[in-house]
Length: 280
Image (cartoon, rainbow, N blue to C red; front, side):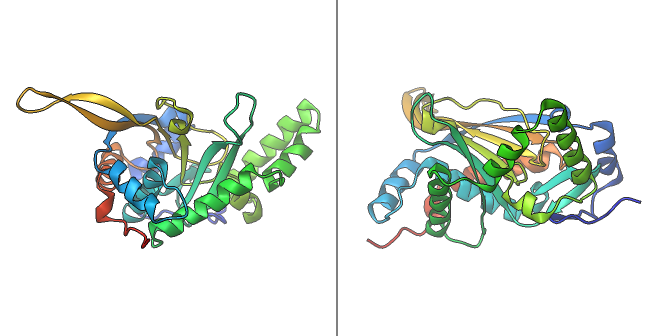
């Protein structure tokens, strides 16, 4: 008999029949992937960041505004914060965001992945402080729980590693993985964001991870100037960044996701409406 509980979510009960069948028709996340491209106009965002950073001890970037907007949107449109496990659709407990960062800007520097639970009721400055703490921990020499687990697993011979991973998939499908393992694993999150702009790279379409249960991957590209044509035919320059999304369609339909993206656009492109500047 299937187990209908998980430590990281509750079974979604309002899912229509055709969507409940989708995890059995499309069994993997990448088989179910839908890709969206979005270009964000930063004409008002960049001046906002300049004003914010004048009165803040934490330097904010477009990446922080994007994360702030994403958390607000997931709170407002909670069906995005679902995932598929064991052939069922679950509503996640809390909004968890994982993101990658280089330990330093060198070719050989390792990439660390940070996972944080972000509260949508927190203001922008509070969220930034939480993110900064996560980045400092990731870049420190302190071994994370995941690092310690990997060290043990990688000490095993290949056949045993495959056996361990098969056991993990079985336990995850039946909701038997302990909360302690899920809460520290960055592959169990609402959203994964790659800040490619910090590496001066363009956004790239990325696969979803079959391991874990992340249904959305967002790659945020570099800030750049592009020419735009006004209504009168004249040409102007706009500051923009591109974002590419990969979305597990089994979680929710594409229209719901597209409308969420438009809401995110409004917040990123006009942050003064949503963020109070710190007092200098």
